[in-house]
Length: 406
Image 1: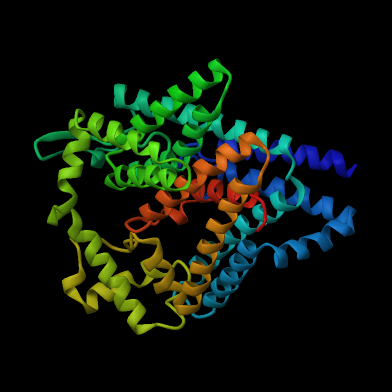
Image 2 (image 1 turned 180 degrees about the vertical axis):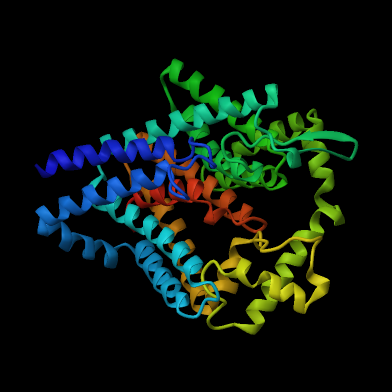
């Protein structure tokens, strides 16, 4: 019976990996409940039934919590989040963000405990590739037709018409992050694949992903792409510097890319983020130990810009900080910051350990690419809150979870 439950749950997890990024951000079943939330609930309930039928699995859960350093750090970070609920200005908001984070921990435990075989990994990767392929096609379709592009992402800069594609995500920066998380594993599949048809497929998909990243107009993603190839060159082969030169040269033929790159030092474009970061630093100065409470930067934003009018940008209210690291430090204080840094260090150790030690070819290729994608993704979080976008972050933590423990 337990094997049947495990197999059924495996199918739901594959479905979650496929649908979670694919379902448009604004599609809700009821109030704020999404299809992904329902799938998560089913996955958790099935796992709960499985461990209640097999008490040994329950013991193994505790062994994993203590034995997996990355998971242990995540749990410590979650404890800090829950403590912060008690003093947060908006407690429901703090609790909601904390429970969302707990979902990532739950998925981490389920995957680490029950789905470590090669056949499971191949199924997860197949679901991931299928989702990336469809989203890449949707992005190009959106560019051609203009359908679904919000007016704020259709404008002119440096005399160039900017139409920033968001596909199903609603925000071009989110699509850019998803493309960056996807590109390097796919590139490595194309690089290592021996079957010519599969190699051609992965090569074409790599081009589509890079083109989608270019269409987002995300300056972050352009720099992240270069950083990712540099990381690959360092840990695998210096020859991979060549794609940086080729892609860099090719990008100069895309006015949208060159226009965005020229605007990197544009004061008007950067002024908003700088003011948001300064606001976060004020919160950190006022609440160095505890922070203002999980998710509560936006709850305190209006009060701070009222106190410091020079930090106000236009007439924005409850504006996010656009920097995941400042968000964590300002909301969770010094202990949250320490546990988060420890988590990231252990993530890289885990990914590198998986790449070096696994004998499974597809897994070795994936994690070689995923190390580069993770480096680029975390770099992008210096000017965005991408670590707190569920459609991106759940995918990230799931593939961290199924790496080998170090």
